[in-house]
Length: 243
Image 1 (spheres, rainbow, N blue to C red):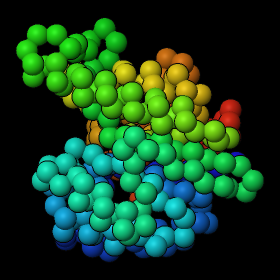
Image 2: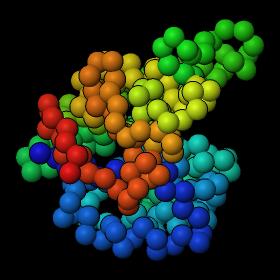
Image 3: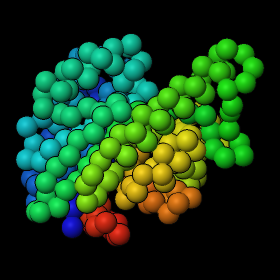
């Protein structure tokens, strides 16, 4: 059994230094890996990203992250990615990370994701160039996620995104903003690739538990939802349990 700790939307600012670290020092007693589901900073500045690096680097388990929309706000996602990677945190955007855990292999594929909405109530690449660009960006990201997941040859596959792949975990959010919280295309990528668990953030007022149409368990780990430093999911190829 592989123990996956996860949290998103920690929104660390310069005044938050030291806030997360005490809860993480003995993380290896509870988990084999930590996933960060985006919105690690408040405004996407490098000073805030340095706080993230200080809080999550050098932990007793590997740390894998994707960026969120807040981490893009200051238009420095590449610089933030480099800063975090230099601190030993794996930051994914269409890439994968693999780990050996007690004789089992774990593969994580990550992308930020994007909006667009869900089946029956979604945008399409039609009309104004701005709308076409919006939806094409989502399509491109979903294709990168599917390619990354398909490339994994591991006992357990996990999809890590910031935006939601299903509407289930958005319940509690105003329906009017669902198109800005995720896309069904991410869920299709997950269903097409034998994925065992999907983890995302972004929906602060949503619901933790959801499922793709293909039966893959989806978990919203935004910190306002899980109300803790992290939550842990125990994953076997056919089972996901919360501990």
